[in-house]
Length: 273
Image 1 (tube, rainbow, N blue to C red):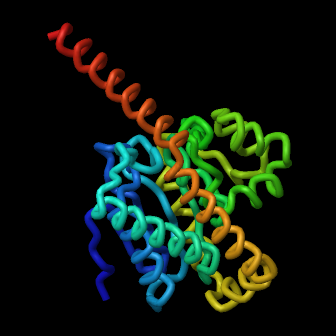
Image 2: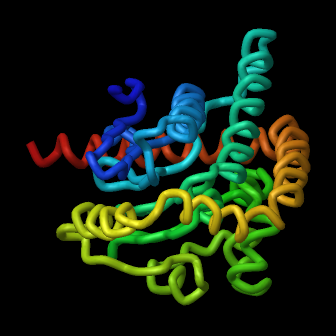
């Protein structure tokens, strides 16, 4: 059976059962629009049920894994408020799906990762990264709050000090630093990165699917209820932050600064012509 088709994702199912779900908006650095969140959720729901899927590899097309949420000026019209409410509902469901996903989930971080793309790595079973990857959670700069269960999992995995340096101080970690913090299992060269990750996945796909599922369940079950509650609380706090004047001002500053940088880049390119 052919995999579903999405505008923001590319899905490839190999004969072995290895299934690649790739963020596929390279022109906007694979940023997450409301549609992208919904597509990712729908893809995981399909992969969970599909008999032909043995394990999943998450990756990105182009030079970024993902630049995180696609920021836009706040819209407080009735339509805008309704859309934001629906987006938050989808994001919460997506994180829940990652927490409960029953099959092996491998993240293949092919380049820089920001925000939600970073926090959700802790919900994957194995993380591989290319040597040019780096990792940023700019939540404080935007007046946001921790998400993707990072408030619980980052301190547990990385240690409190390193986690707080990322989550509270916004420090960008190199791939070597992220690996030293126990967030990356292995670093591969940029050249041939996808092929090397898929080769590792193909070797794993030779194992018993039932054994993989049972062992993942044993390792993940003790934390599931806890993480579902963490996700719920994080989403409540994000809602509070997103509607605060402090966060709105922070986002508007970020959007203006980004536009200035784009304009300066366009002028620089034009001057070279």
